[in-house]
Amino acid sequence: MPRKRQMTWQAGSENRSGRWRKKHKGKVFQASGGRGKHDEEAYGDAWDGFQEFKKKIDEEEAQKPKPHQAEYDEAISEWRLVLQWSMENSNTQYTSLARSKVEELTNRLERLKPLPLTPDDRFRSRLGWPAHIIESVAALIPKPPQSAEQSPPAIIDPSTLDISSMDGTSQRIEREIWRDRLQVQEKKQVEEHDTLGTSVDSYLATKLAKVKAGHLTAGRYDPIRTHLSHFREWLGSESAVSSISGKALTDYHAELLTAISEERLSADYTKDRLSTVKSFVQWLWRVEAIEALPRVLAPGNNDLRISRKISTPAVFTIEEVKKLLASATDRTKLYLLLMLNTGSTQKDLSDLLPTEVDWKKGTITRKRSKTAKHKGVPTVTYVLWNETFRLLQQERSSDAATVLVNHEGAPLKVERIDDEGKLKKIDNVASAFARLKRKNGIKKPLKYFRKTSATLLKSNKDYRGLDVLFLGHAPATVAERHYTQAPQQLLNEALAWLGQQYGIE
Image (tube, rainbow, N blue to C red; front, side):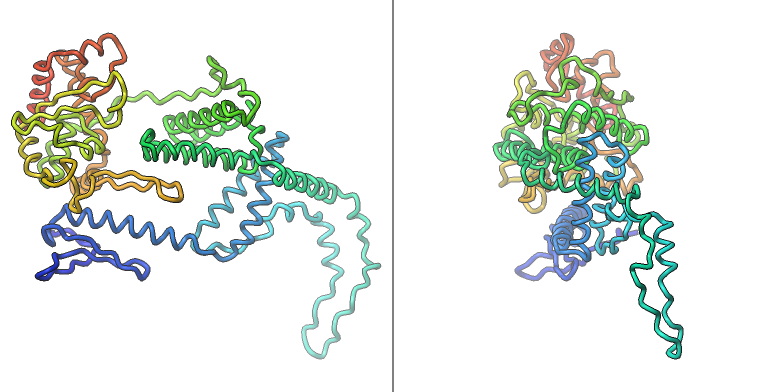
């Protein structure tokens, strides 16, 4: 059965080729149809382009004021003051309550049409009069007349209300105490310039400068931004950086461990998140934003340790590889073969230069894109399988700076940071593989492909150790350093053996 299209095809004319078209919220997106209506690769690229277009439109809509936004902003600001005071004074009861309310109200505000606030959403309403006082006052209020013949209710004389029990109640005392506390916090907000929020922004600005200078990838910057945004919301954006104590970091560590135990986050992800926070705090100390480094960050201290989960490397089976290759288009098949044959990532495929390919011998010689500037990383020559080389010659670009580009002539993978500091990502290789996975009912991720070949090499006693060289990694042990200097012939034999396992050679 033909694949159901979610975009409209517009046939071309004499001066214009066909194109794909789709409307979203009154705005029209159009993209090249490539070689025609049945060009799967061109349709896939067009659909990916529409997703970016749709995301941009949705983001623009999200910037418009929402119903009740002013009330939400006021309530969230108040709860953040409560959180700030509670964190600084180790009040665990209100710390937990304030943090949950900030998260709840923030999530509700992200909805397209947030519902009105309830009294329970405001902090001060939780410090109201006791229930028995409210009930007694309500009993004194006359009910309105049921008909026009009945007399209107008498006006209540305030002097007749016994409110003496309200003076000195614990609720009133607590209200007054919290009013003073929040006033102090508001004053500190005005006087305190070195807040956690501004410090995180400063730190991210240094990282963004590195991205623009080419010293840090956009893909690496984005998780740093995400991790610190979480930490900032957890501790309180308006908290002073001086509040980042060993106790605060220990509490945050406990929060992450809870997320692991409740299976909300993986151990690997939480370890990366905590590592980012540690680096940030150490930066604060180096730039003298904090006077002393918390002792829990001292060398050799394991109080904040999170262990990564040890698991068997996940790979594709030989049968799965054969099934995917058999049903892939030529372009997608080339992507997969290069990953199996040369250990390439999507970035490696996108960055492949014509000068790195020997078009007579059928080899590729290069360092991995990710570590090309690192010392000790080997330059590896891969002999291509006949099918890999045939498809590479067939699909190569004749007028671009790189060997492989998409149907628009643009790089296969692009990662950049937009004006709002958010990651914008286009990955034609991953998109093509996603379509192939759906077609074959396979759920494993693309990154397993290069690992599959490396794992096969590691399992063969004759080629064990060559997996490090195959992946283009810097050697970490004496044995690995030996294999990075292995004869080219041995690697050639290993690659030929890999091709035989997949039924290609």
